[in-house]
View 1: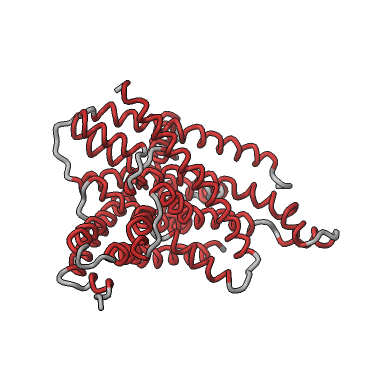
View 2 (view 1 turned 60 degrees about the horizontal axis):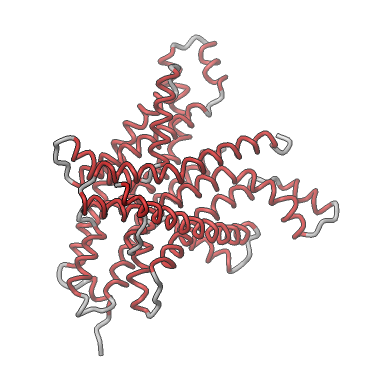
Length: 214
Length: 225
């Protein structure tokens, strides 16, 4: 088992890197989508809501299979690493958009009006008034999404990536070290997810103290 | 001229097989959801218990279920538990067990959230007008808590339906596996089969989950005020 630890380390790094890129891109996509639906930009709004429904109502595994096996038939070839990141982004974007939109919606109208009345421009209001408050409110659900996305990376072995699940399954198959492999698997996920879970709990508590006049 | 790839869906028994696969997916989901609701309510009551140890234990259970991915749990039960305990668990049964464990933890948290979000004065007013504990629960707590927990519970149901797609990893012959079989069988006659089959399965999941999540949102809007 000790000889195979490096396999777990590599898989852990792969899972983390997939997770990081996936989370980063889905945050960006989520941010754009939530701003579009918050400001009700015509035309784009419809596309965004269709996208959110599509990404939220289908499993990542099916999305990955479609991307990885389906799209090459249309002449779009993607390698498995990019494919996994695109899949995660597609899924995560919808969830992040909902989370951030929830935050934006809960910023009261009076805040915006107060900002405009002291002579800030629309973009300044968005940046300095709406955003900090919305983010603070959306933080718990963003945190939940981060953990959710990291957990969802566990299906990427379906598109031929040697992630933690793949390594564990391989070791079970090769050496019949079932208990040890599974134990290491759980440990690896705990190593990734426990600190993040604790971090978000901590941040949430800090922000609740900050509480904007509430 | 080459055949249209979409014909693959209707050739032979393909459509029927896919729908049979879908039924297996739905069956796992339905059984797991119904058990999760029952056990979830019990778990929720445990989480609200006055006993600190019970509360701590149920909290630990919830966090374990949340932090470790479902796929890992499936592996643990399919490969690990069957090795330690000399029983044969069919892959479908493993799925149901794991989904029920996960679902009841999440459902328990929803129940806990619903009941503990009720203002304390609701219960106190009940006591003040002389209702018994049982009456307080049947006439005050439960009717209000149900409204708060149903949207969350429906959301959980869609999540569970989506998670059933993981069953393919431990060898359940569900809709995805059937799709793969059809693709492998007909890849030479229909080179574009993966696109159509996976696209079809994609839309199947969407068609199941979308109405349910719309329903959840509607109920949430309606009961918020």
